[in-house]
Length: 387
Ligand SMILES: Nc1ncnc2c1ncn2[C@@H]1O[C@H](COP(=O)(O)OP(=O)(O)O)[C@@H](O)[C@H]1O
Ligand SMILES: [Mg+2]
Image (cartoon, rainbow, N blue to C red; front, side, top):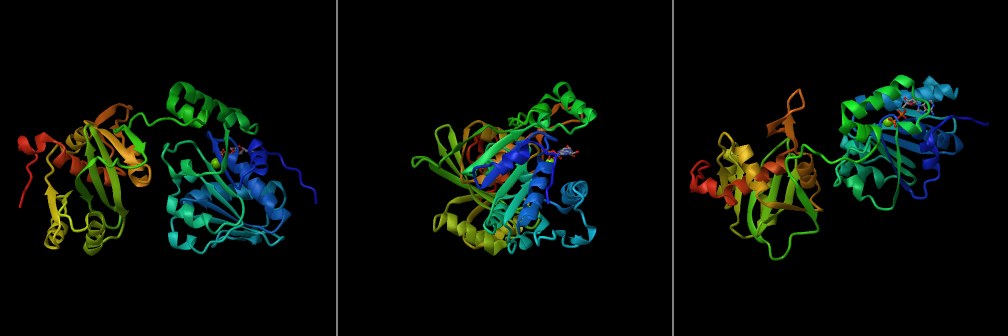
């Protein structure tokens, strides 16, 4: 059977990619999803493949890629509704090939999932652990598609031996004029969005609270200062950092970023970090019971007293130093990169940060506030309760 399809440059980029892993960056509506679906479908018709297409959530899958798949198959006159198992979201071709649509919402499911072609759609949303679980069970080509909204420190940036392609809406001749015009209008109305979604370029986060450097590791002559602890349980992870200082430079190391930890788990994490030392640990005062329990276990732990302005105060203390984070501390880097000032509905910057993804940052704030500032001890504004 001969099949003729109309497609975009992304199709031939994928087909001719010289490496096993291919990353398709693109502005909005550049034709990535459509072309990559066409490519997967053709592979399923040419041979026997088990394609796994992944997004972060099920609603986003249903709204976009599953619908596109049906449209494309219908235009090829190949769609057979009976071949689509709606419950498991698997399409089975007459060749025996399958395309499964998966979300990473349920990490358990990922562990048993084999594929011969793997495609992470909107890959910037997907976490590194899911990427790892999916990748090790794929035997063939691996595809990532995304908008260039990721930080320079996202795990996707450290993938080695991948070919990267960049496309924009100008590479998609099938767009309606109105759509093209509304994308072009961004150049006037929202220059930052224009650069990301129009031109498909990486941009800096210009609302970021912190500037920082990513370094290899903490230098040997940096001195250890203390540990910061921000406990979480189910929704938020428990975050632990170590703070080091060398002159006007500080180094922050991520020691723990994990959900579901109870007191004993936190204790053994701390034990691993500090051994038999009596190192100082500063923790969120909102958890008096946890602090008391850890204290009775022999840790040198104290609560941070949080005044009215303590968030901005802690931020200022950190900003007085040049901040360095080792590149292995991915969660810490992500939090510091994404942490930004709130804006009001007119886009004006406010003087408080967005309360989001700030667990390790809070731990760092506690440590800095209590040990790097004169104010905290001298002025008595942030009184330390010492046992
Ligand atoms: N080969 C094609 N044939 C027909 N229409 C296409 C084709 N490729 C893209 N389009 C149209 O362009 C729109 C945007 O493409 P899409 O692949 O969703 O872009 P992206 O994933 O890069 O944002 C699609 O919804 C579809 O209407
Ligand atoms: Mg898309």
